[in-house]
Amino acid sequence: MTLIVGIEDAGRVYMAADSGAWGSCGFVDSGAHFKLARVGPLLLGCAGDLRASNLVRHALDDIPAVEGDPERYLVREFVPRLRGVMEAHGADKTNDETSTKGWGGWCMVAVQGQIYALSAAYCVFRNTRGYAAVGADAARGVALGVLSVTKDRLPVAERLRLALHQAAEHTENVRAPFVEAVL
Image (cartoon, rainbow, N blue to C red):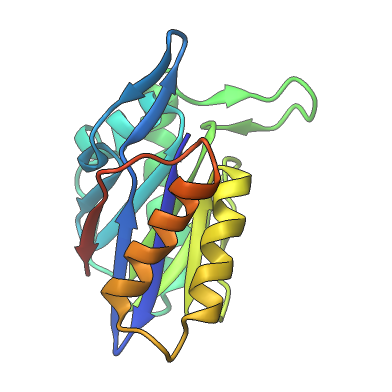
């Protein structure tokens, strides 16, 4: 499982990820570098399907510069490219319960100093708290609690690290080492 946390601060986005991954053989230490990627003008943090993370890091090309509204850009420019890559490489799946297509994960997207979440069904949305978390449910809850109570009390980097450390301490889905990136 995975935890990606992000904070908006002074026109920048600070993002951090854990290193844990689960495969058919159990826990695998993937290295957190696997979960964060710079793709064109974006910083992405991927949670979920490991194949999708591979494709985000290595198959997304020709991502255009952001012009205008970042949400509109993500919906009209980025998501169609991501969906095309997932479909072309066999990572786009149909959910048997809902018959919807998706890539089996969640993604945190940093663009123009803002954090957006991208769902498994390619839905783009943004909360206005100034921080976010995607990944394993229990770990996400712990991280959001930490980010909430530390807002305006700790520097950004300390908040990110504390959220990841507490999620690792209180859930089985998060593993050190942690890695950070800024856009």
